[in-house]
Length: 432
Image 1 (cartoon, helix red, strand yellow):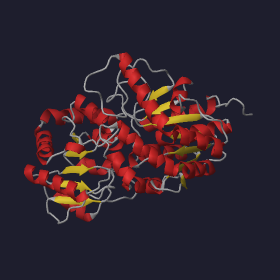
Image 2 (cartoon, rainbow, N blue to C red; image 1 turned 90 degrees about the vertical axis):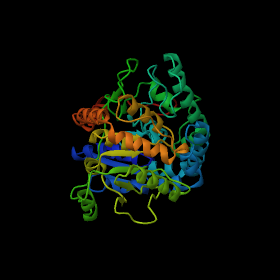
Image 3 (cartoon, rainbow, N blue to C red; image 1 turned 135 degrees about the horizontal axis):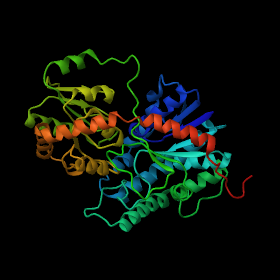
């Protein structure tokens, strides 16, 4: 069976679903994973065929629009304007490439960033479609949309459902003209109506996989059975990978350090952020590993108490640190939870505020510190408090055991294979 999987996102979007792709390939399926060059290395050695697109998401996040997107914080309108500009620049070449690479597929799986393209291709070829999502984007009365910072006051169930609807429509209406033009010109399908593709998936109860743990976000009672919360999808470190000798020496030279990394977040002035981090670490008096990430967080002068890594697998690295300071991206959040270590969340945008609030609610993190207003004193206090909080450490260890007992990949693979056999195809009115 040929299974096509696509993600246009950053590493935190691509890596989890790459783990599922690898598991499907190991079961004998012909799997092609379509993504941008920034994340191509994640598929090496997985047995998955790689389809590369023109246009790199890493370059986009470093562009003026990407910087505005990341700096949008709690302002959804600013985020939507920046995302719309990125969409306008890339949609034609990305959809053309996805169509080329996925030709002849028996099953189409779209991560949220590529949902519109993959759902359209599934319709055009009369094949089943499955949505793979890293966040709980299915409307519910239990909590508001995770795509923006949670409201200051809790909403009633009807308010949460309305919140989901409004955020979904804000995103859809901002790109509707571009998406519908691509559907007509590239896929050969009529335009979607005002309600949009995600509403279609919900309305038609299409199979939806949510890649996180119910121990963090319990499944709401008002979701239909087409929605599956599988547990996290972890891509293990590459076979044969060994840590650099300098890193192992640093780890052995003292107490477990603090990890600080913001993943794919980019900065107009990375040195300013690096200096803030170093000042906070000096105030606390602890050792640290700083992940340079896509933002280039590299100290100007070396220090024996700070080690800088380009990339290191979180499943290995987080076993050796006392605390993770990170942006609250879905992937890094999952890795910190599985490792059983506390977090300090510094959210920049979108769902990062939601995950930060969830970690606080289960006692494995203090209140989130939004990057837009972050100070040296706030960061130092948060690190110091988390390192000293034995109750937080016990809570983190407990949730780590629970998450390590789950097998989200096996659950997801089982559902995908059942969908391939039993799911009804996506017929489009007016098409043969």
